[in-house]
Length: 392
Image (cartoon, rainbow, N blue to C red; front, side, top):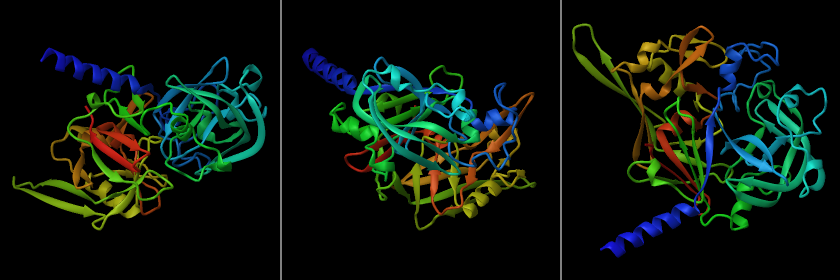
């Protein structure tokens, strides 16, 4: 019996040794920074300023560390499942581009493994864009040295929001996207160079906001210590993204009447199925305007502006009669309660609370960190599927 125990223990140790882990660190979102008057380096700008991107990376809250070059140069990046490109601010950044000046920059002259390319590249993202050149070097992620990795040196960053971010670039982990200039993404090269035993990666986001470590990105598989029960997998149905089908969305809305009687009224959205992506590059949940409007009405938001923000009384976060928003995925219910979808946001000397649901003008859904903190997420490149399970 002891031998069997030791064999099982050894197998688990070997499996864990094959997993490569990257600590994720929590940062203030750019929305938070802008709402609190920017930083000493940049002028105050309103969150409602039309120059500020209304979507991409505005609400990103987690970054991890990678290195590029020999000797290694360290950078903070957002691991983004909604894109495929790797770009880093460059030492060659044009002198008048403020977005580059206050970020760590890659210096090709300091790397003995740098290979010159100089092909011009531009990557658009929402209303923002970066422009620069392609370069090749060793990219190290979780101790894995990815050889001959092409990436973009950003020489112009056209993004007011990026100026305030604590990250130096984006490492895209998108599924088989039409990446710019046919550059093979880091994820694909990791698999191609046999640096992991399985073409799978997964995310765990810590629900404890005060924790020093915000979570982990795991390359090469999953960690059962981070989730409960079984993983529910659904196929990727759009090979441009990690896109899957939500069966339907049900809102269990508890209504209390003055005479003491209680009536439970249920609402169903996307009754015939709708498309969604799991996006680690944003915190919020985005959906079609009509559906998001219904949700925000049912959770009783009290404020709306033209830039998509819905506010709500903070006491409702702990109220027992708040609606449960249930995403049915692969026949399983993935519930979000008011503890999940109501976000307290500090504003200098006071706190407001806002809804995590915003519209994005499309018929699909984007499930950001609000969903992914509650549910451990798995991205299986080999089997073209995504998986979810309740996070511990």
